[in-house]
Image (cartoon, rainbow, N blue to C red; front, side, top):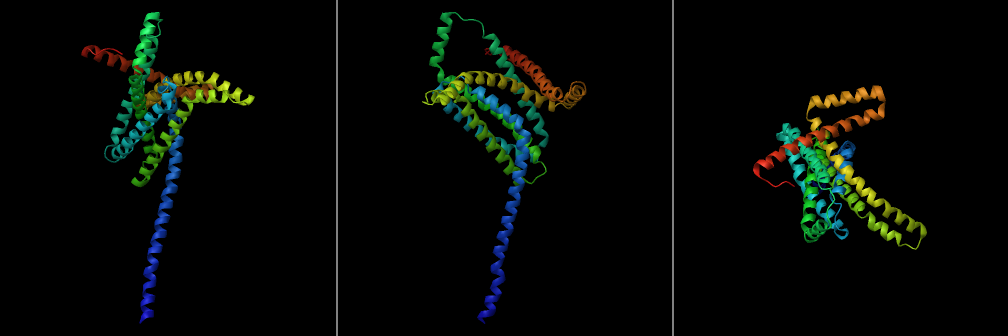
Length: 320
């Protein structure tokens, strides 16, 4: 009587093991798909990630040296919050209102173009020479408003990050559009984490280049001192370049979003690139879409600035 009972229990004792193996196989299959899809999404969003890096490095430049890393950390935390909003929102929009993705991206693109135009206007409108008294007053005001200035930089960087993150999430969503919810969630989450850690890790390294150069320049080794001196000489030019590239990226990314949202304009740019390729070669053809997107972004930003300026005048809002 005991032996039959024991034999009867053997098949049921093997069932959990089989189910576990099946579950592990399913998990491995999902993770493999997620890895492949994440790699594809990363390749497609690489250009935007480069613009994101340039923009954020430019946004946090000009902060007092000892406050650079805290500012980068504050922006990174804000960026994580942006992703916590954008990833669920993207999944909901994809499920229930996929038609809204393009208009929302268009609004974000126009905002980037607007910010780029405002930066250019601010540069040209505030470059006139100041009297010693006016310069002293301005320095005094800056000395008493460092916290407010830092807070404004953080808020501005987080707003810009939100727009660029939205575009990256939208591109990623397009990559996983045909997948099930689990794969979409895992790929979007992976891209969000990789993007935030990668971008702000590099931004932190860039803004502390001068400190690294200063440290190396005090080394007893001649080669190390020379390297440190080279970094110190190069760092200011790098920051100026990033500032320029960050502003240009606003027009390139924003203009690209706007032109993609207007089919006839997007096709016209593609046709122009084909014409340039036939007449001038591959390299000019590859640059043509970016240049035309940037030009469209500049025009769109100027129109938005005019509109916003008119609204501010009508409402009596002070101009910045």
